[in-house]
Length: 149
Image 1 (spheres, rainbow, N blue to C red):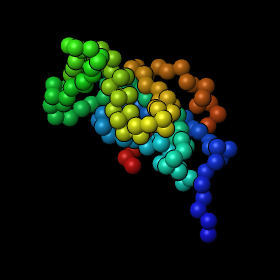
Image 2: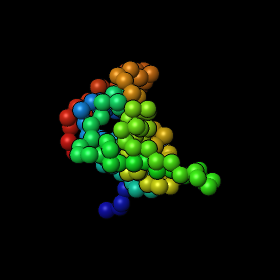
Image 3: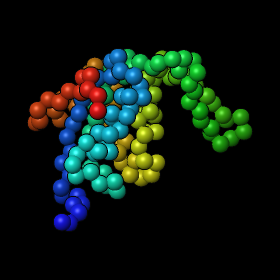
Image 4: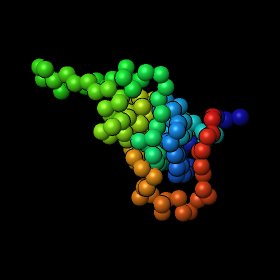
């Protein structure tokens, strides 16, 4: 028996809509990362981008447990002296909640060109509206409400 390896012609991308309301940030991010990687498909190949598109709505209503709102920080440095910045999770969720979800998912993807290609298929929106209704028209509706993998 030969080992199956997916080719570019075999890739079929679907669109998934995930409502983040009431979901824990880390558990949501791991579910989204698996869909972006394509690990839910039987033809999963680690060195190819077989993943699907994922639309996350209601990013502003994501939950965190414990004291993470005050204790979790996002760090960055501009490269210049005095260019160190840190932002708490509470401030990030107040200013731009979609970036908190995007960074959580990006941390669970490969840190190379393949991971960048996967993260481009992630669309995160603060509220329930999104401009991707047409992509869901051709396929049966998939909902990931309360689904645990």
